[in-house]
Length: 565
Image (cartoon, helix red, strand yellow):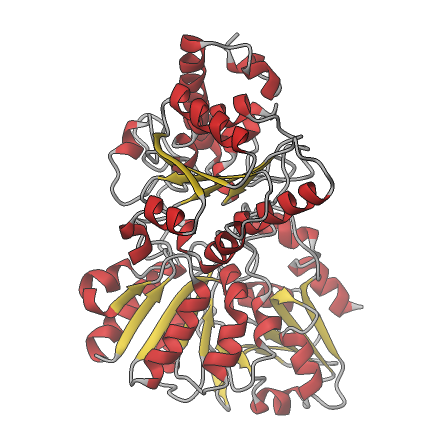
């Protein structure tokens, strides 16, 4: 029986003293390393907030006091201290989410994994509590220094400093990193100076691994009765030697690893991101006007090799996707061709800038969307499933969905040649499929399979759904052609002409059915029925990619059954 086994809620923490708390902190770290090494997850951030989270739950009374984590991937310790110790299926279907989840616990309020939002949430909750006369309830926002590079955080701080009385504590978890080292002039200038210039009360910096010091600071902040910033200095990966010694932040998020060494249990296969990383460097050698932009994710999106090769031609804007798109438009105007690499889910945050700054001004900007479609274990906030429908609204924009490594390289080369409109590439998370060469090319369309027969159907494969389209075709007893347009927005005229030769058209995509590529094909094709097979307009839960697609009905067997009917 460990001390952790006896913690079923925050109240149990308050009975512990001194050395017991140190023992509990050690047990939590051992638990995290043991469980997360089996399932994968965000290890480094959570090892760094053990003492901080213990102190929060000993001083504040959750859920009466509201705790909001920004981003939510640092909430594993919070889950443990609020009675959730079943980590055996963390980030797996029917298991714990990797982020706060209202469905799991009343202690979870904001299901966030998009950074820089917690201060706005906390400010709104605190305002509401003040207006309701609930002056004994405190709202606490825990935000990393990396998330403070996002503009939304500073919009919130501007309002938090407006002088309106409300019980709000902002805890800055300062470990010098987001996914990578924190960038930007504000961070170099220092949190304390900026906060004091805003007129906010400031406590710190405090040792984020000293429980006693943290508790004193939090009690002082709670007693203040108004907005207070507590500045805690922490160490990402604290207490786990492989993470402490890794300068590249490999332990921010891990797959299954050997807990003793931190090495992967199964080495990763060469993936989509690796192909992009290679090709962008090759293009950089040929194109001196090519520059790369990353939003605090140089390594995850594959831009680290480009940065090593061309250190003066890569810009890390921090967690600021809006700024990334508009500064890219400015670069394009001045004669460069910027390549902005993002996770697909994070493009949602910069739609206005893409529409009104890049597209309206016909800026030659290339946007590369990693982890498009269903991503799996990170759940609703990370599925890159909105891009196809969203980007179909943008005038002049062209979007390519490569089906394999060769078509990714080809699409990137084509995209950076476009100087008068935004271009977008999107590809999924994970390992590459086997090469899928075209059997023939017709009017610029890649034909992957053609079989004569009655009642012929044209199957349009969108990017990574090509293997599924071929599987569907193999099980049909009718004439069938599988075509990959490669460039799917706008719908190619050649595809509309080809569709007119068939009895039926089926479009398979891992984006929304509503407003997606299938919807566009249906508008472009006259007189031929078009069936769209894609994702429902819902927030999809976490699970493996296969599980999520199955739950959405997007499987080869179900599509084939529909086409047979």
